[in-house]
Length: 145
Image 1: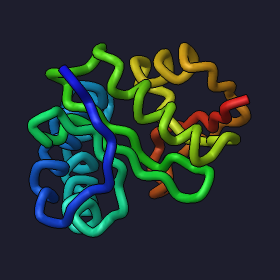
Image 2: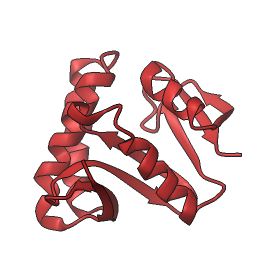
Image 3: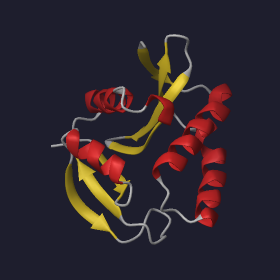
């Protein structure tokens, strides 16, 4: 499967929300149902408008996306059907061409993502007891050396 990376388009917002939903459901089983619903509401409002980088197939079908703000990767979500095929790595490598000192935060309980970032060479620089919304889901702060 050939993958290209391009900017997101407003009209594919629903597809990107579906990728977020499927990815979170596959990797974030530690979230409470109520908090998961709260996050989906926020994401559903935000994603269609966000300046995302999207990984697409040669049929231009989105299979993953990343949000990059300056040198910080705010989000990286891959459709679980294509995980393990190098798409996350491609998006991170794209981010590194734009932001060599890339930082990100990852839920400590998302062991698959923690393993992915460590394999990619990221180092832990800190830890927060709460997530970005102040909920008790610890975050690891990471940087690419």
